[in-house]
Amino acid sequence: FNTGGVFTVSLTATNACGDNTVTLVDHITVETTVAPVAAFSLNPASGCAPLEVTFTDESVNDVTAWSWTFGDGGQGNAQHPVHTFTTPGSYDVRLIASGIGGVDTLTVTGAVVVEMPVTAAFTVSDTLVTSAIDVTFTDASTGSPTSWLWDFGDASTDTVADPVHNYLSDGTYDVTLIVSNACSVDTLTMVAAVRVNGVTGVGDLANLRFGLSQNYPNPFNPSTTLVYSLEKPGHARLEVFDISGRRVATLVDQDTAAGRHEIMWRPAELSSGIYFSRLTVGTETDTKRVTLLK
Image (cartoon, rainbow, N blue to C red; front, side):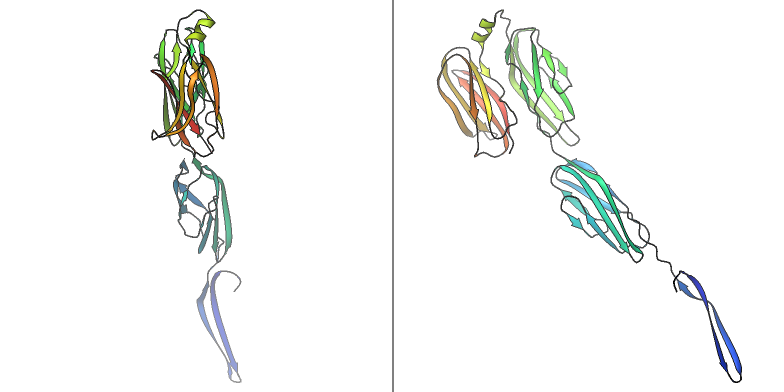
């Protein structure tokens, strides 16, 4: 039988005396085989690594086997597999549905998007300014943030990535940046990020300068430049600590002239992570957050 359907069978027997016919009505049923049509759904479709995704087979017709390719090197043959994505990226997912009637393949491009958690970081154009002078803040966060909330410490806020802010009153201001994307939120507060002094001359401003500027680039790999300034000569100590408070480097420990100084740091032996640089001169200290990415 080459086609599906319900068939009647007849048999006629003949000899010298005559013939006889027997008929069996609707005696044989032949089912039609239909090729599979691959289809599936998934949940969730995006999120932070590690991301566990449940795939639900929604293929139709006669399906007896399933072959999944998840786009990250992972595979499976369960009807409704669960797969964990551990690396940020966009992944194409393919399902091959097989049955008596044939094979069908469905590939969904960018079916799963795994995002990296954000880490807040920023730089400041100048840490000591006169009042009514613009200060530029540059976002240096990692993880592709999609929103920013700045608090400049003087009751002013902004929501752009790289704001320019004008401080109108003398003082020392802590600046906070909150960044987020679809899967995470991170906050960084830079203590005493900006000092505003109402001096009138550039020379006076230079003489008053003390502090540790944000290193550049930040995040960095393999090296970064740390910038620090002294308002008067003194014994300067510039150290780097990990997040547990363990000192991992001493970059400067000597008598230093007043003014601006730079030093390059190349921590080849350290792993990726958050570190803190600290400048100490007498009783004054300043700390900045440093991000190493390898």
